[in-house]
Figure 1 (spheres, rainbow, N blue to C red):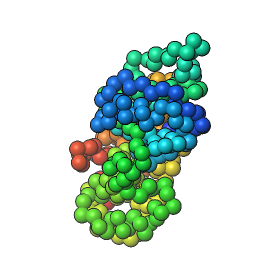
Figure 2 (figure 1 turned 180 degrees about the vertical axis):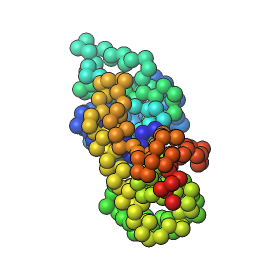
Figure 3 (figure 1 turned 90 degrees about the vertical axis):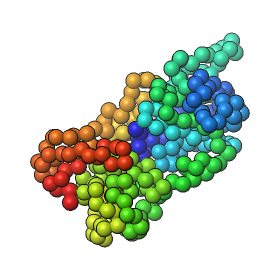
Length: 278
């Protein structure tokens, strides 16, 4: 699932490509991608509008329009593809996008397609980003200036849940998901099963530093190489360079050589080293 670093890399790369272009036509090929909205609502909201910018809110990608915005959530497998061909041929007839695309935005300089073969991702037009409950209830962004050690201590002090579950709660910290929560806890040497409120101020500072480091390092990897929207098979091939514990069950810890364990928390896999994460 794309998390904060992946979505931020998409936003930065896409911004250079689509900002300033006008949406000539919106085609919904699979209506499940826009639910609970109707395809007509999406089309009415975007057609004829100019894309003013591209932003990220947590794991959401926003195409900011002159009126409202398009909110995209990639969920597990969603991605964007780009076709350099203009939205319309010289004869004025619309070009037909590839069959696997769920939603196609035909722009003045090309076509941007949203693809999700499992149809978990969503594309919607919003008059305001906050009209989406998921966006409205987002917690603090861990790459924002307001994300401080003191803020982390406050978040921890109010929680009775396991530490890993707190980190993945989007209403507390926006954009941090399963992969980078495991990575941050490994770097901070903290057991993911510990009750969040029991961390000391020193441990909270360590966790804050680890979260910021892991996300910034992952973002750097996600941008080198940058997303290639022209290649439908492209994915974030460089991000594995930033991973130290995730998906390494049974392998030696890269810090203490203990064996990495995998447990289940909240229906998701958690990877950690029981020897050096206390």
